[in-house]
Image (tube, rainbow, N blue to C red):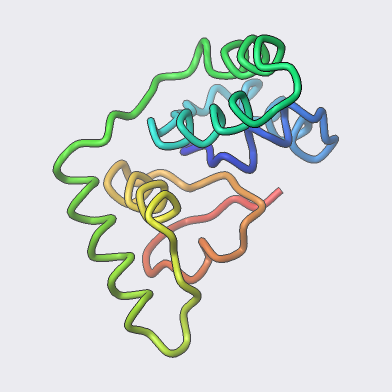
Length: 131
């Protein structure tokens, strides 16, 4: 499973739906991964938050035991195509660059994306686990 930023933020906020899904994933042994762009987005909250040290510690604890998926050429190419397809579409929502990278990571690794963002459901071929 590819963990989106929204899911990580929800875990940090101790939202029950996210905590329940995280417990289910851990109990079932389903591997989870975090794209590097998600770490960047989490650290926006560190820079913009009232307590940078507390936020950094909390996010580091969340990602500490998760494999990080580096942004490579395959994911970058796929993300660019996705973002372009969504920009050109009259029916699909616009995917920003970071969401396109997360979606492309799910497609390249053939893993669902765990998120509360329903825009991901409009990505052709992507499995989405909403919480």
